[in-house]
Image (cartoon, rainbow, N blue to C red; front, side, top):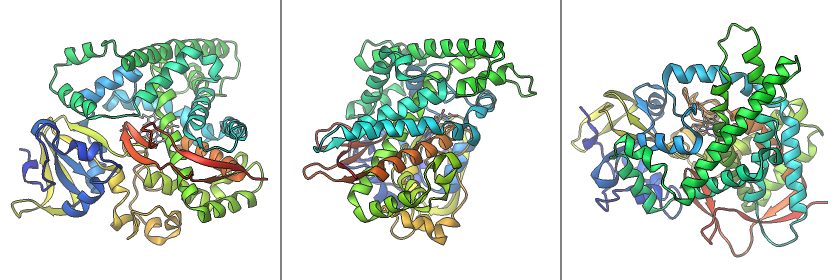
Amino acid sequence: RSSISHIRGPPSPSWIFGNMLQFRLPSSYGDYEFKWFKIYGLVYRLKGCFGQNHLVVSDLLACQHILKSPHFAISPTLDNQLRLAVGDGTMIRLRGKAHQRLRNGLNPGFTAAAARSFQPIFDNVAQAITQELELSGTAPIDIVPPLSIATFTAIAGAALGYSLDDLGEEYVVATDQTTVASSTQTAGHILANALGAWLPTWLLRAALHLPTKTFKAARKASHLAQSIGAQVVKEKHDLVQQGLNTDGDIFGILLDQVHSNTERIPLTGEEIVDQTQTIMTAGQETTTKTIAFGLWELAKNPELQESLRAEIHSSPGETGQNGGYDQMPLLNAFIKETLRFYPAEAFTERMVVEDTVIPLSESITTSTGEQISEISVGKGQVVIVGIASYHRLESHWGADADKFRPSRWFEDTILNADAVGPYANLLAFLTGPHTCLGWRFAILEMQAVICELVGKFAFALPENDSVRVCMANTLQPVLSSGERGVLLRVSRLL
Ligand code: HEM
């Protein structure tokens, strides 16, 4: 029996939207959310659309339980969106043994050694941004588009061994259109998603064929990705047959496994092809926005920027080639703080698939005065894991958790924090079976791009624009025009 109704939470301003406009569409992300957990505790109840109860959780034990337990899955509406955006066979939709088998098969393409071998690709894309910024003149420039092209080029090269030209303009444009369209969220989207939860699966699937501009672009990108993936798999397959080395990119490494005689059960070529659009897109916006938010913070804090630049200039050349980025304390503290403060996936939603109990690390008091240390949840219950909220807990991150301060990463409280996730005890890359597959890739790419850009350019805020932080699929920096972007004044250093 669900005990959600007695969990405390904010009053709901509307039956239609519940608290969803406050939670998902505040003027700046977290306006309400970061206050609610201070008032109601690490687990509280929100009203969803049409009177539904949602549970929001930033208690670490509860978060870990939800993300690791088979009793929770993605909602049918999200599942449907994934079918449209990245295809039926994507690893993100799979659960249990089928998912584990796929991850085991994909892991060799995402090891630390594989990520390190892509360093020249990261260096090249970082230098390409430099060239673009050098041409940009003195007017403020939106840093997001060049970063977006760089991260897409990096993943195309590292995953497929392809350039953007090899991918073809049609695919690049369709993927970009889908990304831009999914970077905004409106009250209409929130309502459509809530209504989608009531629709039968056949009707939801039929809705994917609606002739809207976004759906058309997403269908086209996903369809073209399958063809590109199939072509790459065939090319690598032929190379392996000829006894040639293919381990210069992720698909090559995976195909080599398929043909090698290891005891591991390798994936089929079709299964690898089915991951093409997921791998091409999962890390693009996330990495782009993380770097963009980081540069924005540096523009706001010239002293921090100067210290980081001094560390970069005093580090030996060819830093990345020798694993030397890991020897740069401020660079890594800065990346960790950026991921803490701006986790690309600020929250993730799960649905209970079988009645179960969520354990809590600290007991809470319900509206009836009862103290509880676990919460019973029934099938169908929506649960929101508040990743950004967890990253703001004063008990974990210090009294000034609401402040961007990389130096906190040198303090004992943080160094001894609870072990969670693959990187820096953060939830930014999640935890559990669906932990980000490309997190090592992302860290190295961010290290390379930040060292290149901060080493060569000074970043400052323009006079007349400000950035708002919004959430639409990922955390978005939004300009006063309403478009995603971060305007910065960029000057080349001598
Ligand atoms: C700063 C950059 C990144 C962040 C913050 C990030 C974050 C995440 C998060 C939170 C998830 C879990 C989503 C969920 O199930 O709710 C995820 C999954 C995933 N990420 Fe990343 N990611 C980043 C970069 C990358 C890169 C560069 C790649 C590829 C090279 C990548 C590939 C993936 C894949 C394939 C999954 C699906 C894993 C699965 O479902 O088993 N990510 N990422």
